[in-house]
Amino acid sequence: MRILENRTGMTRTRPLRILSLLRGRWDEQRAPALQALADLGHEVVYVEEILQRDGYRALINKIKFDVAVLWGSSLQNFLMTDSEPFLLEEMGLPYVTLWTDNPIKHLFLLKDVKTPLHRGMFVADTRVIEQLEDLGFDNVFYLPPWHIDSAHFNPVASDPQLACAVSFATTVTPFDAERRKWRMFWDFRMNAAADAMITEVRRIGDYIDIFDTLSENWDPWSLSFSLIAHATHFEQKSIVREQVMEAMKGRELHIVGIGNASISLPNIKMQPGRHWNELSPVYSSALINLNMSGWPRSCHHRVFQTTACRALCVTDWRDDAVKLYEPDREVVYFRSLTELPEIVDRFTADPGSARRIAEAGYRRFTAHHTAAHRMAELSAILDRLL
Image (cartoon, rainbow, N blue to C red; front, side, top):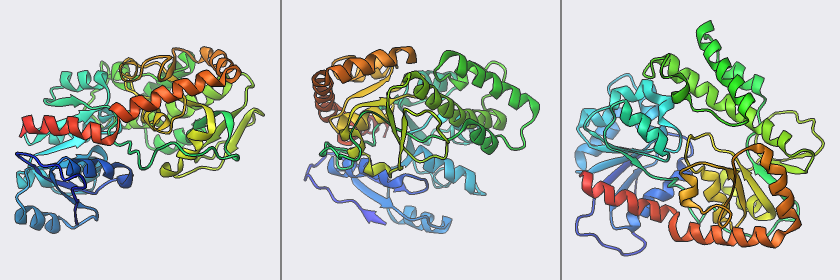
């Protein structure tokens, strides 16, 4: 257990005593958000190890917390692994959840915490918020990616081994491998529904939304719906990455990521994978960094990582994203992968323009999109909720 130090000396008239519990992957990546809350003047207790249920009970009974702040993945793991009702519900402690993935995939679990104690869900996509509200969730708030810390993502010198015109930092896994991994013990109805989605992804060359596609014919609270949503999330990623490679039309593309796909295209240069906090040299060494987003409207976290490194991001158009980064001035957007060759050719012929947009994107990130900015937004909402 750690009590996070307030590094700024900032004080509050009514500081909140905040509990956060480790229960999910990527905790180190998300922890800077807790530090930002401490720097705002809140009292933050961070339990960084997984305890037995009695250990959590003893801590909550000992310290009078105002609220718990959990990652969505931590809540998911609590609900999946515990044989008793959710601990914070049992203890009567209000809590909020911050999501880096789409909570629509987890409705089968979330139905058990659709309660007054679950004071707020913070989600990065306005369409997903509409979907959750249509399902009866109260207090769902828009919070764009909140976990991009400038200590982890920042401009660095170009690495000659990584220098290239176009880079894509992404995992590349074969579609068939993803299909086998996630569809075990499915019935023919589930397979048919997922296959129809995948056919549409291949047709349009973009992600499609699980809720808007299936909710009329499938119960979104069911385990079957959650299993289809989870599987097609990864299956769609695999297909879209193949489509990005094909869309380059022979132009060289460097891919940095963990994966086991065998790429036969001669223009695709596979680079060794890197840990998430070792990506700054990748972004900073490329003239153009590509991105595709699986959210309906949201700005993907890779856009924030890239701009934090003062690097040019070229990404698919999403309605929420263009309100956060101005098109063609701070980030470059495409509405179809067919536009990608022209964009790549334009900036490789005029690298000065790429650097000017990268600089503007960096200024936007540092002025508006750091973890400290996002936690100030969260703090203001917590003051109202509590």
